[in-house]
Length: 111
Length: 117
Image (cartoon, rainbow over all chains, first blue to last red; front, side, top):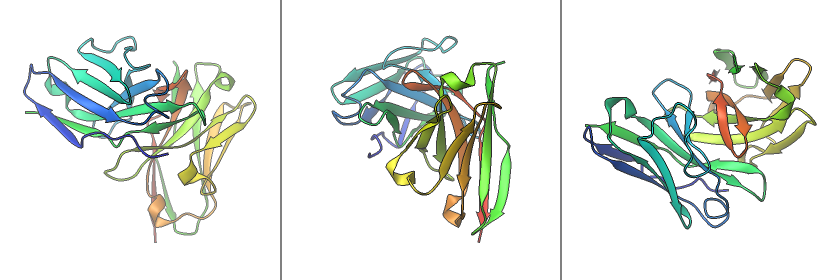
């Protein structure tokens, strides 16, 4: 199972919106409404910020939103803030094995 | 408090064996899959595999099949990840995570494994 494809880095100024893409195949991203996104600040463990494509866990800012079109999922961060500077990983459930696969990660820099 | 607790670090030499742990508390451990996720220095997240302690069902990602062994003790709510012969390339951070539905909702703080040659 190959890793999902994400851009290595995305940057934006405070207040702007940015979007991170996550490209997969019809066997993972395109197969199920089971894409999740994780935020990892430097030196910390990952935390889920989006699950099942577009759902936010309790406590996660509504500035984070997710979507999917075909075999590509996206994470949008609106109203970019300094605290959003982190690495972001997408993940997809794989129904054939009941496992999951991660994307390579995207570093978000707030200018 | 619902949490997964992992030891902070392990230092070993090439060829040695190692077993690291992940203790769940605050929830019914046997009802959830526990995943192991590797993060090599400066790199991304990789799912190594998962174990369901309720019936010991274990699934390994293809890249890790035969390289590690996952186990769990449901009486103590602890999942384990072990190596029989470490290599320098096993150096990295190892996270355990609880799978809820089809995503990972709870993560341990990770165990940093350092293997010297």
